[in-house]
Length: 414
Ligand SMILES: [Zn+2]
Image (cartoon, rainbow, N blue to C red; front, side):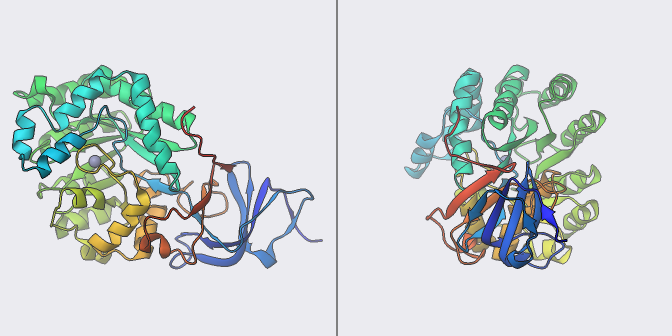
């Protein structure tokens, strides 16, 4: 007797880029079918091998289009007050970054606007950005705090991120980034600010369950290695995984430090050297590349892609969406930029926003590839090969999106 599968929905006449690491390359399965039950993938394979279906199983005919895992944006600063378009304009009129900072601009201004904004207004603004992301195929996004820089404002940002995850068809992973910048009131005593982060903010935020991970901006203009280590120690005590903004503008050795704490990811890493690459390879830490910030800041130092390949470090790609250095909420554009600016192959780029994006969030057991048993987060594209996702930009080829097995309708925040 032939096997019968119980499914809520079956996609037929579809081509799969499974991105399953147990298959080669894109993990292609052409002329395929894929079955969903509840929020999981329960069957996939060549359509002619599809077992019998219970009568009345709903079928979605996909007319030969391509299905990938829902895209994962593993590094964003999506919740913030105001924007800085006027500073962008000023800079192009010749006003220096220094002058803008002296006038209270830059991150200080975003911190002031975020502190002042109500939770509801932050939620509505962030909802627009998050909806724009899902309209481009994103089903999972990481959102950092870090524009509050005091306990109540950091909590407010993280609550907004959690609410987005509850009200949109989007898995939201939160990172506490209290150590993003030194707030104005602590400018003369950054170590006291780190004490506040470690002794008050982190324990309370952990207790409220608002952070899935802890991040630090480790840089000459951010926090030192010693300060970073203090935050990591506290995170470790509280059982929270860590990640790091590292080696963006200089090589401080942040990535090796992060590796010693088994960090989920090190992000930016333009200045990472071979010893640092070796360290993250050994710890299984993902290298998250952020071509949007590289582009917007007109940087010239590229991340060490050949070394990352040599040591087989998984590379993720993300938008780094934020109001200062990467006001870009298009993950498909990042696919293109990862190829054009960093010379990734289209396959590596797509891995970066699927399986490796999931790894960077510690979610690869349940997301990031089309694999039986994984969550049914699926993006259907009107393309003729998955390499087109990196190649063309500007025409949104997304046809349909499912998150947790449910079709997404793009109504935005309710
Ligand atoms: Zn960032």
